[in-house]
Length: 137
Image (cartoon, rainbow, N blue to C red; front, side):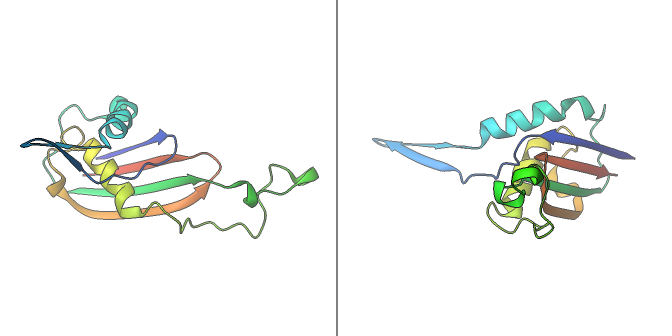
């Protein structure tokens, strides 16, 4: 079975968990909790009725927004230059982008991340920033 959908907006990277202390008490928190919740809310219309327990094969395209320097000027305003790159090689790192996406969908689109046995992930420049996810099981 295949589920394919997109989540609009700039792909967000997973942030490291933080700790703070007050006296003898240590408080741990996830600074990415809101980003994960927002991601899942956009994905919910595509969730399976029952999360599969079989192996999961993921293909993910992280479509990053193009900077203004990729576009022409004057009469070519809004037209992507021939010299503009396709691949996004700057931060955020692809593994941190993937981690936020996988953690957001865990328990809803599959029972546990341990089921993910194959991943193809790409970070590309596109005019519309979004994350495109294809789940095969």
